[in-house]
Structures are given as C-alpha cells and as structure tokens.
Amino acid sequence: MELLSVIVPCYNEEENVPYFYEELLRQEEALRARNAALELIYVDDGSTDGTASEVRKLHEKDRRVRLVSFSRNFGKEAAIYAGLKKASGEYAVLMDADLQDPPALLPEMLRYLQEEQYDSVATRRVTRKGEPVIRSFFARRFYALMRRISRTEIVDGARDYRLMKRCVVDAILSMTEYNRFTKGIFGWVGFRTKWLEYENIERVKGETKWNFWKLFLYSLDGILAFSTMPLAFVSIIGLIFCVLAFILILVIIVKTVILGDPTSGWPSLVCIISLISGVQLLCLGIVGQYLSKMYMEVKKRPIYLIKEEL
Image (cartoon, rainbow, N blue to C red):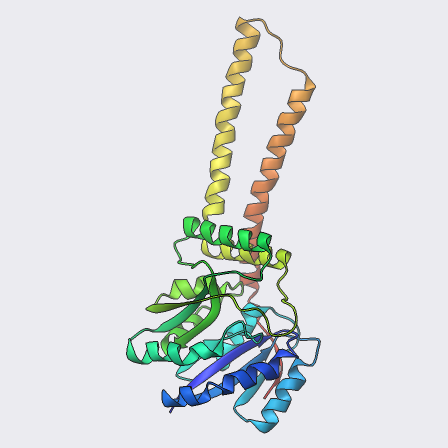
C-alpha cells in the first residue's frame, strides 16, 4: 500500500472537523482499491475555538489522524507549508475542512497520477455560485492581471485542492521563503499537471474567514511575490512625468516670451504639485512594499511555531 497524506489547514473549524473526517472515510474503500492507505494531518492555525479538541477526539479513536497545532495564527500559507513538512506519504493532497474541496474526487485524482504519468492533479472552480458578485468580479480581474504581468501560470478559479507526488512536495518544500503565495509556487515549480473542473460547493458549516480586505492583501502578496511589473510601472510613470514637465516648461516659455502671456496663478500650480506629490507617494509605496518583503526575508524568522503535535 502507498501512503496518501491528507493535509487539512484549519482555523476555527470546530464544527467541520468531524464532518470532513466522516466524508473522507467514505472514500477509503475506493482509495484502497487504488492501493492507497490514508494518514490525515489537521494543521490547527491558532484556532480560538475547539478545533484542536475535536482533532484530539478523532486521534483517540483513529491513530491515522494527526494534529499539528500552532502557537498562534500564522496564516493558511504557513499551515500548508507545515502540513507538507509533516506529510510522510508517497502522495500528499491539500484540502479545506469546510468540504468545499470534495473528497469524492480523490480516487479519480489518484488514478491520473498512477496511470497517466501526471505529477500532480489540481482543481479549479468553473463557477462561483454563492459568492458575492463584487468579490467574484475582483477575483477574476486579479487572475487576468496575473496572466499579464507574471510569467508564472496562475489559473483562474484554481483551488489549493491539489494531489501531488512526493517529487512535487519536495520541490515546494525546497522553497523556504517567508512570504509565501502557494498558488504561485505551484505554477513556479512546474511538473506535469492535470486540471479537474467542478462547480463551486458551499461550506457545510460556519462562515468563511476570508473577507474582501484579506483577499485584497493576499492578492497583493501574490503580485509582489511573482512579478516585478509594479517596479517597471513606477519607472514608466516617472519617465512620463519627466516628459510632460519638459513639454510644459516649453509651453510656458513660448507663452511668456513670444506671446507675452503671463503664467497662470496659484490654483493651477497647487493642482500640479498635488498630482505629482500623489504620484511620488504611490511610487514610494510600491517600492516600500518590495523592501518590506525583503526585510522580512532577511530576518530569517521561522514560518511557524508548533505548540502541540500528535
């Protein structure tokens, strides 16, 4: 039997932990038919509810269930990295505890790895049913933007739900950067990937922890991690304003010396100064974001700290 490590990052998923376990076990027979045995790794990302307690109960009756509990909330990216570090199987799969990643797809995903020589099987949603319209709109715009400014393939609607061979897992773990954007890392490491599509599935219980602001910051992390286009954008803006300033100087000289027209008053001057100051602050902010990422990388802090492990 080959071992399949199921990695489940959790943050305040007390209600969903047992539901996910039961749903996963329903696929156990089909997975055994494909010569796969299970280990289940719940990564508790500093939950404030009884998530860890529910995992302990499962561990008492099924020793295949493991718990990795953080000392505080480090974020889903850290939880994914920790789960991959602890996984010991020939295969590893990332799944959400809310059952938006259907375990019923696992046997089919495993078949692609075993029979068709794929290195990983990834999933993407073809619909966003149940999501707010504005959130869906900006999500699509983000993926469209990334396709334009980044050489790394990031597929629209891609989920973290992905089954991988050990070679892919090892490649991801070799990237020890502190500022992590897993969707980009998956594309960057390459390997032969099969994409499975399915319609959006709503959460079984509870509410999503990803509000619009968190998703916006997450998208910024993705842009900064896998594209230097914002820095090129800053340079282009600077060049444009230099050219415009030179043209305006010529216009003022011509109007004053040749036509005898006096220069405009202070309102136009204030508007120009305000515009240029705003652009300068924007450019400094973009450069500052890259510097802040470099600052965090140089500090070499651990990606996560473990409080408890079963």
